[in-house]
Length: 344
Ligand code: TXA
Ligand code: MG
Image (cartoon, rainbow, N blue to C red; front, side, top):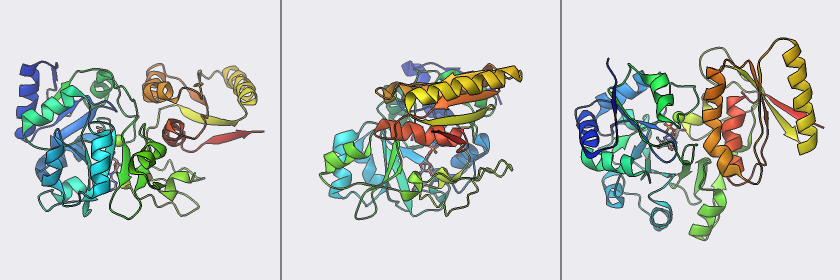
């Protein structure tokens, strides 16, 4: 298949929208990561997304809308809390899991009775959804298992020849995927952390917001056996199906160094020297704890740059796990297959 590269003009958006309406696949920019879009109400179109990504079909997709009113078409579950968060954070990088209406095919929800919905902030994304006239199901536009794409060329690297078109838009502002919060229970629960933090949600709602306990676990064995599933000694049962799959992995071996900053820097320098002596190409990743936004914006792009440069081993310093740092570390731990060195 020839993948068309489109711009962001009105004419380009019209073409892209027509592809979506006809059951095709279009990758498009959002403020989090690039998405691979299909008509969310067309089971056959959604099926093509799983095939293009090589994605397990029990992993549900986020449905993207361009107007808050469109939420009513997808769910009967607009509680006062859901409404509060829609007002506070939409358009923006927040996905809410709510009960799904019948019109949403099982292919889109991965067979679940709930659906994740989000209204992106990116203008191009919303123009595309509006022009298509249907909600758009869109996982991140990467091959399954690879780092999420935050620049248009990342999408081309993974999906050229596998999808109908790519809208070449801006680099993604946030750089990590949306916060996913389950709104179906009494206490809203974060299933995937993002740049909208637990504290921001709790402040907007004026009540407690929980975090899926699976997010606090670090499975201690990583299975590279090829089935794409994390194998763990402990019970690791994340509620967002996507969180149990092997994810975001660079080609290089990756090790996270955790501990006091100066000691971590020394341990990394030592490891780097040892590896370099063995002839390995080493990359060091250190971010500033005080600026986790920059870390989020940069991280996936950095992993892809390492792949391109044929880096053998990536040594990364852990960030403090609070606020946006918690969301960045969620990705970093997975990228490294939970390979963590505690520096004492
Ligand atoms: O920022 C984002 O959310 C990006 C852009 C394109 O919008 N999309 C994205 O989609 O990250 P994806 O498919 O790569 O990740 C969706 C995550 C998965 O972990 C999935 O299991 C979870 O959201 N999810 C989706 N629907 C769910 C549901 N009904 N219940 C629980 N988890 C759900
Ligand atoms: Mg993804």
